[in-house]
Length: 277
Image 1 (cartoon, one colour):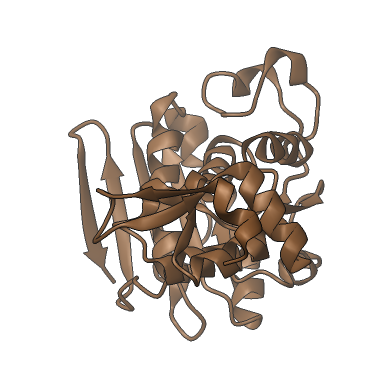
Image 2 (tube, helix red, strand yellow):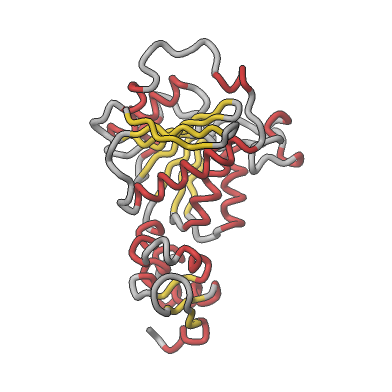
């Protein structure tokens, strides 16, 4: 490690096995300049020398340095930046993803204020993907963000998803979900599904070659989304988004079991169950 970085390093213990070196935010900037890299790939290089960016040091013990570096080199496409998508984007940025594609054609409105993380009174009428990108930059300026301020459809989904390593479904329409899943699988990408209504939510990972959402939504789509009938209270999207983000991280780090499972979250109990399909 160059001597120029030593003032930015701290030896730490108590997080994971053995001691390790952490590097602060100014040190990351110095390392990026020395390596001729942007911040995210520079942090990945440091992690491969077991030097942890301090912003990720609390991940140590759950994630290995190699896994943390892998996340910094990954891109997630988040389709829908409202109730689920805002939380998923924030969680993935904080855990260490290096790039996000944010897609949403809608604008924030007053009814979003009860549950959508980045909805503010001052931002009503603004596009959700664009606002989410601004918020992500304020959380993690190293994240490379691509904004798609339009709805994902069967026509444009494949183009929106290009360059991603995983797709996270934060939509509220079954036909749109099926179209995006089809595009994801055509590109060889895993697809993290999430849906919510009332105090319940469902999440699952589908992969190319699997039955996927057809096993869950095999019949004709309902005339009305369940969330419009049951409502979406404040905590449900936050809780389900945590599960989606966790599944995405496990998939990207190679930890997620390959069995097809539909996870059912019921906050009225509360409880979580895995339904194998």
